[in-house]
Image (cartoon, rainbow, N blue to C red; front, side, top):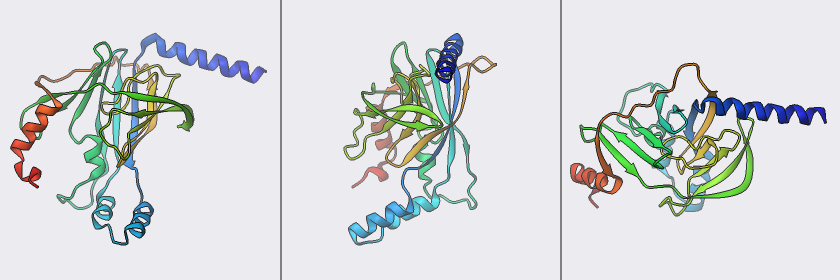
Length: 239
């Protein structure tokens, strides 16, 4: 009985502490969502060697993504990347799927999310993202020692494997890595087709004020931005 009271008091204090400010810094490790063993199993099914998949594992290097948020705004981007022993132009799928040099911004009041891309087309674009739709389930698991609930992003166009988020209701911040938001709690783990984001550090109500600043850029829809990419990099879109 005494232990139960202590746990309840801890949760109440935890929630009260969060509501005082409503800001935080969340650090995630990003790694591959498949292993060499997974590839070997698939090779047996297809009865052939999946060379491209093996190269993706060989070239992949883990990285760190940091989510910074206030009560209504959030930003997410890569902050650390494991150094590659040899410089080459091979694709690092973790770095690519984690966002590369992009920055992701979310605003809860307008329920909007944008991706800031300033590299590919030599100018800054603010790419507006569609609103995400979630299927909330009652399935739970421990992530970093916290009880989290499973949510499936049903608005994803990926028919084979939808992104899965594991969120923690005890931290009522509707944010997560990249452009993922809108859940009744902070996302501690995010599973995409190729990579997985796993929380490694949670800093609530940091001493320094959280400031989220979006650089100026041209606002554009994802569809129109894709058209610009296709026009600029025709060779990559040719059949």
